[in-house]
Length: 181
Ligand SMILES: CC(C)(COP(=O)(O)OP(=O)(O)OC[C@H]1O[C@@H](n2cnc3c(N)ncnc32)[C@H](O)[C@@H]1OP(=O)(O)O)[C@@H](O)C(=O)NCCC(=O)NCCS
Image (tube, rainbow, N blue to C red; front, side, top):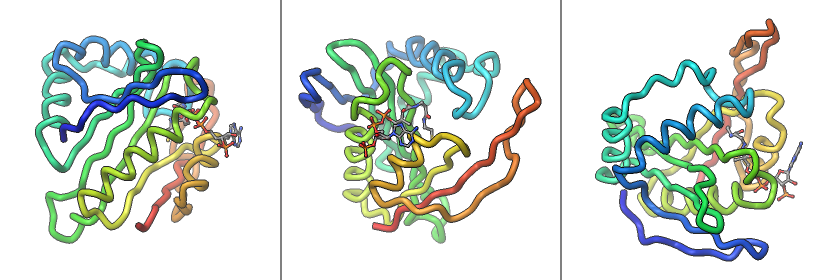
């Protein structure tokens, strides 16, 4: 889904939210590798990110062209800071009222309200598209993310114990959360 570029002042920093361009595919792959290495709260290890530029371009195109998907890039004072996205579960009649969301920022841009700003932006777009609920999975121990989601109305609705096993032998749970509009 395409949207108008939005500029917001956040605690003295200039935040720009906009769609991704096809020529940013490489930047987005590099971002995925870096954020995956900065935290244990994302899906996989950095060396498991194997997308090609063409695959990433298809991902950008899909998110820009379809009303059922949205990818929002955030820039802080001109620097790429991270993104958030939603994918509507519209391929089946019984799930077409649901949207799945994801968000990840570079560590240096966390903790000053950007995540909240982006999440609220995303939720507004999801509501505008007529979805009835937003859903996400957060890793147990990701207290900042859990707090943020709870504070905008998400509730915990399930947990898979030891869903993630790390290279050091430790585990974390997957926590499912849902927000009914
Ligand atoms: C999770 C993430 C998107 C949140 O964005 P952010 O910009 O850091 O978050 P914000 O600054 O907008 O808000 C964080 C909130 O958590 C609170 N918080 C910070 N650390 C916390 C902690 N350890 N425990 C509980 N709450 C905490 C903050 O006080 C703030 O709440 P408040 O607005 O009520 O004061 C971001 O940190 C991130 O991308 N992290 C790495 C990747 C990741 O974990 N993605 C989420 C996958 S589900």
